[in-house]
Image (cartoon, rainbow, N blue to C red; front, top):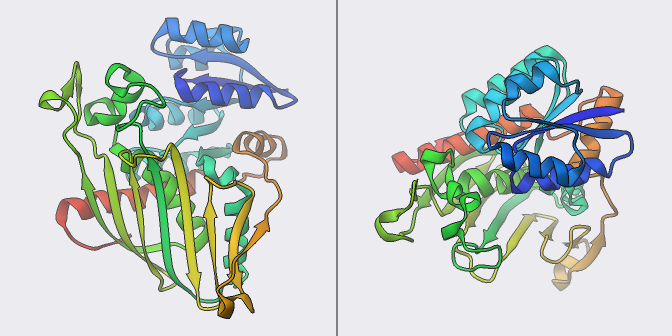
Amino acid sequence: MIKLAIVGTGGMAHTHAKAFNAIKGCSLVAACDVIPERAEAFADKHGIPEVYADVDEMLAQSKMDAVSVVTPDASHAAISLKAIAQGKHVLCEKPLATHYGDAKEMADAAQRAGVINMVNLSYRNASAIQKAHQLVQQGALGRIMHVEASYLQSWLSAKHWGDWRSSPAWLWRLSTQHGSRGVLGDLGVHILDFATFAAGDIQSVNCRLKTFPKAQDDRVGDYVLDANDSAVITVELTNGAIGTIHTSRWATGHSNSLRLRVYGEKGALVVDLDQAWDTLQICRGRAVDKVEWKTLRCGQTPNIYQRFIKSIRTGRNDQPDFARGAAVQKMLDACFESDKTGKTLAV
């Protein structure tokens, strides 16, 4: 039996709890949150016996094998490092940290400790992106020339997930003082991993960020709304391809849309998660001259929670690990610096 604790019991933590409870041989033994009432309610909902308001106390008193870190971004590093120091396996929400230095420290510490470490880049759960990675690696598209990727949401312009103006769960994502690095840190981490996992590593970036006025004095209560809302990144990959990667919370009409297009000299593919997670569109071979696309079924792939538990059982660390999380964080840091300086920067 793999015993697991969840730190941070907000919205995303419920997804973690449901997923781990569905895995045979996995038991949730503790929940921890700085808001005790929220932790109590979370534990009651998911049948978790132990509740804590302090991570140090939980690590000292609870008997668990692993920790799932589902706190705001700014606390990922400190909590994960404490768990690693106690020899616990760690699944951490994305982004791994708020800066590359912290992310690298986490990756190095996990490697030294010999614990399983994974970052929840959850769109790796789509078998379509796994197949896209395989096809590019096998050379099915030939030399890669051009890449286009986007991650679009609309919760700043719509209320399909509720009204962000009255919910701390959304407001903190708009405030750097509350640990947010904006849409680039929140969604950009996903789409950068999504695009580069399939198309290849990034060599350089040129990034433009923008924060739009959305409240009087750009403030709601204690939340100063200064985090970026939209990001546009021009990239060059190490394989020579160029492309654009962009993300926004103002994309009206899009609830949660990820799309990737990869164009090579021998073919092209499109992954569109709004259409399906287990199929992609491909144009190659004789279809290139006819400009015809066909649907490729990609089967199924285990989700991140299943892969994490399997990694603990087998001792073989699956992907994406903390080293990958740190690599994506390095891309993010380069994007922030590019926006600040107005320059194209190497990654």
